[in-house]
Amino acid sequence: MAKINLLNWREERRKKIEQDFYVMLVSAAVFGSAIIFAVHLQLNAMIDQQASRNNYLKTEIKKVEKAIAEIKTLEQKKTDLLSRMSVIQELQGNRSDSVHLLDDLVRVLPEGLHLTKFEQKIKNLTFNGIAQSNARVSAYMRNIEGSDWLVNPNLKVIQTKKKKNSGGYSQFTLTSKQSSPVEKNKKEKKG
Image (tube, rainbow, N blue to C red):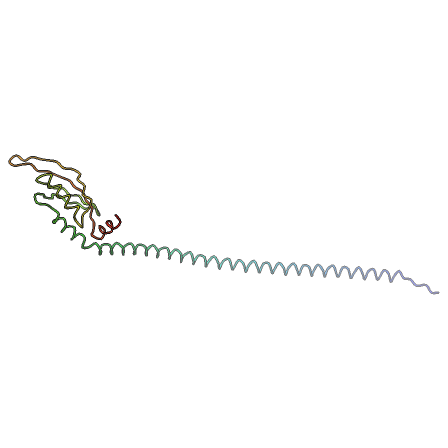
């Protein structure tokens, strides 16, 4: 029988297996590195895409905030214009009230009573005057209560003064409120 040396074959097989192992190890490392590099590139691309989306959103938010600021200024202008319009409409509606008030002041003024000063603050009226007697002031207050354009007469001060040559007179201060027949009818319906 011939002698066969199997050691060389085993050694060559071991070297081949070892070489194949190193080749597979290097190829696995390269493949793993490639996968890690690809994942890294993909994540960077996703981060860049999200950053661009965020920047787009920030610019759009700035545009919307600017539009909101413009809307607020326009709303402020609108409320200013509406308040001006309401004041103008109120003035247009009340334009004849002052004429009616002055006309009514003359009508309710009894004989023997003279106004020395008349003051109006919004709807509050103040009358200063001179009367021949206290009875004339009382008649004036009754006339105001019966008026369509004047309400709530209130006597603040009345002083009796005497003249040397003739009888006395009374100085008075009276307050009242301006009204209109429409307001008076509403109050009467409620009352």
